[in-house]
Length: 498
Image (tube, rainbow, N blue to C red):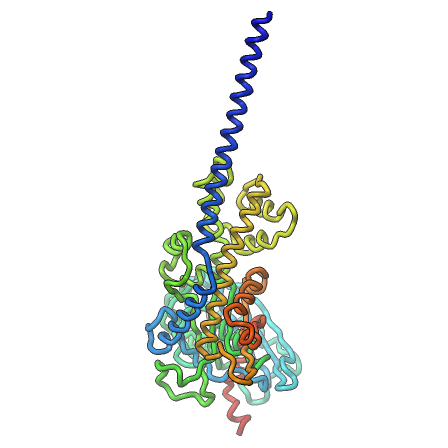
């Protein structure tokens, strides 16, 4: 009996020891995995670093590229496109104006009644319409015919007091957010379609001409007086409300900037100098690149696998289209190389662009004690049901690294524009305000991003200069801005002035 008991005790002890050893090994394996996951995160953080010295180099590089792009066509990765907008709204504009905003699968028609210096925007009405999918790949006549018909029906709803003055043609600002080679304020040839459109007979054609022909076919008497993109519309809307606006920046799904340049500072401009002495430049700054940009292996892989490799490098590290995707790529590496989510890599984590920037923003802004928003996003989007608080904290930190880099580089880009305009120093006794009109969902809705961008601007410019630099939210530039540009480039301006 005694021998059996001793034997059982020995077996029991051995089992306990083996179990204990398994626990120890499991813990060691877990701590080894955690250490590897954290090493991946730390290396990424280091490679994303934006110390102030590096940001100054990025700002200087932006200024240098701006000069190069203004000097000659193709002289820089920055296109620095001449917009032919030489007359921004002043606030004096009067009358009824229309806008058409075509930038994706929906388009908007807008009607604005302007009341001059004292009246401002008296009335604003709009209608949003989805483009039937077959028209996105059909013919020019079909697409522009559909748009002209919607516009004519909208014009027919003008109420009493919302008609143009007798004998005057209705005028329209056309926001067309596709690559265009502009040839005048109201003409531009389509370079290529994007965003799912593919209508071959429009490529190379003047899009204003195509719209005008469609309007004439149905008897709609309306003149397109300005062809613009959404960034220039934002600049116009900003300037209308505030004469100190010097530039506009869009930080949304994509990103771009436009600013007011002295016409004499544009060597590639060979036309007559405009009366105003100014010209709005569409920078197309998403295409900026520099050896000073802190790019990581994840950015390089994202670029190689994108639809436009080697292009839009700046956009791919600062804009809303890509921030969530960068987070996904780092998480995937942590899952594959450090079993961050357990032994099986979550299948959903392998799907490009499944984690969108609004999801990332929601996780980044989670202030609950158990980070339950992070937990629910991982569960709902990536189908990862169980995550510890420690893991959730690491994911919030990853979001912070990606957003901080994007926000600080955006600030450096803005400083590049301010430097180009010579507004990065304070002249004796001068208190000249410089206002940057901002638009886009990333800036508007991702508050940790916008707060970081604004504090970095102050850090880069110093207290004295940053007192004179103001960042202002400017909503719906692509809509009302286009109507305002139709007003400031109206064919009736000379009549009114004489």
